Image 1 (tube, one colour):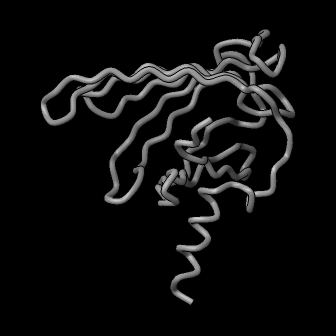
Image 2 (image 1 turned 60 degrees about the horizontal axis):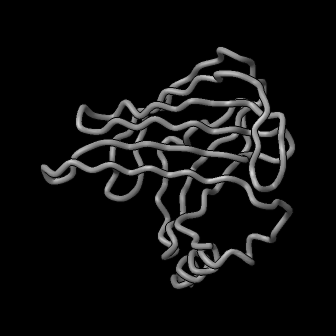
Image 3 (image 1 turned 180 degrees about the vertical axis):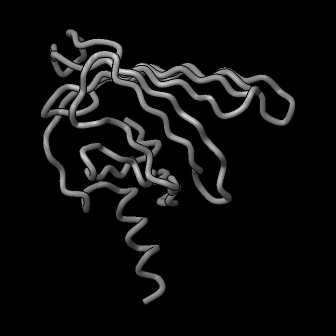
Amino acid sequence: MRIVETAVLATRRAALYQPLVITRDGQPRPRQPPEPLLPLDLQVGLAWEWQGTLGQPPEPRHHRYIVANWGRVLVPAGEFEAWRVLVSELTEPTLLAHVERWYAPGIGLVRERSLILGQREGQPFRFALSRALREYGRRPVQDLSCCQRLAARLGEGD
């Protein structure tokens, strides 16, 4: 397994937020304002949007979310009753992204599929991602290598 990035999540104002992503090199990529990934009072048809910036230098982003349905999803870790949330990237005309996420109560994200089409430096690109929960449990944040590198970087100024 290869860790590409680690998401930092926080709960506030009745929603699960993502204020920060940490790259595998331990570099923080803040989201301003923190992105609301999931309201805690989910219901089918619920929709919301986020507009903000990601990383340094700040890159503008605009995401639209909708709770599509409640259903069963099968992943290597088992079968779960979960909420299916669809996310669209609305940032710029040269970037099109569609993401499907399944969230199981008490577990969190159990499946994600993404398709991103766009252009970089005039060249078209296509990026597809599929990930599924294989196992779950609790791990101390100190055990995550990317978080250890971030903590070391933050301690450099002492």
